Image (cartoon, rainbow, N blue to C red; front, side):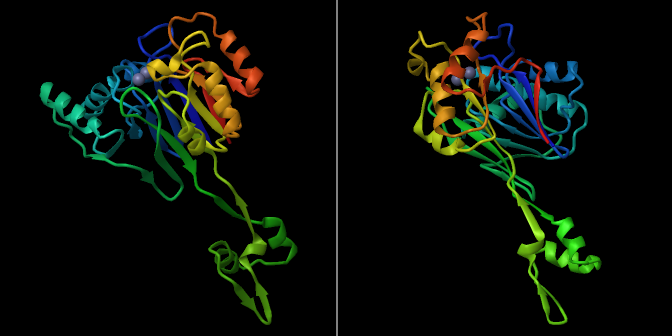
Length: 290
Ligand SMILES: [Zn+2]
Ligand SMILES: [Zn+2]
């Protein structure tokens, strides 16, 4: 199961919506995407563990996306964290954290490793280039293909020896007498889920290419269409919807909505005319993939 928590869906300055922060949890693995000021308070207030965060991925160095990082790291140290923390982001993130640690006389009690992309046996997290007013990147959280044994077929063919099943699952052919069992006949492959997060971006071809076929796309939708969003390095709701359509995603979450807007129904109304499966997540709501 994958859980995506919308901790802060606003942008720019704090409003009724909190500053950007999105947590993805899967099988005990937690990754935090952006960490605006106050993110740790939101998490602690709602019983979401900050200690289990294994990776923090920052889209860019604007204050609304990054100011929560030094404080969340200091809290982890205060709670005697020893596990390594991975950090991804534009190169300046390293300088920013170093300066903030020095400036606050803080030295982390646990290892911090800056990485360009993350991979384990089950998932990958990789960045893609976005188009904002400063260096920026979005992220793709991708589950690897899952391979399961076709239990029905195994039963039908009367295979009971677990060693044979194990070999088939690991992709080996098995010979029984003069019969050959081929793994492709006994395995069911299921593609993993793909979740994409743009952070702040204007409409940009590389976003369409990178987020193609995502199961969920969280796209900058800072303004309604009466503003030239590109001038500020952002997208309007219609641009976000068109990108979702062109990229053939399954669902679009409209995020980073400017505090100037009270009525958010209008965002969904406009977006759904272009891309039907759009929604505006509320702060502290979540989305599940089973
Ligand atoms: Zn922002
Ligand atoms: Zn920004």
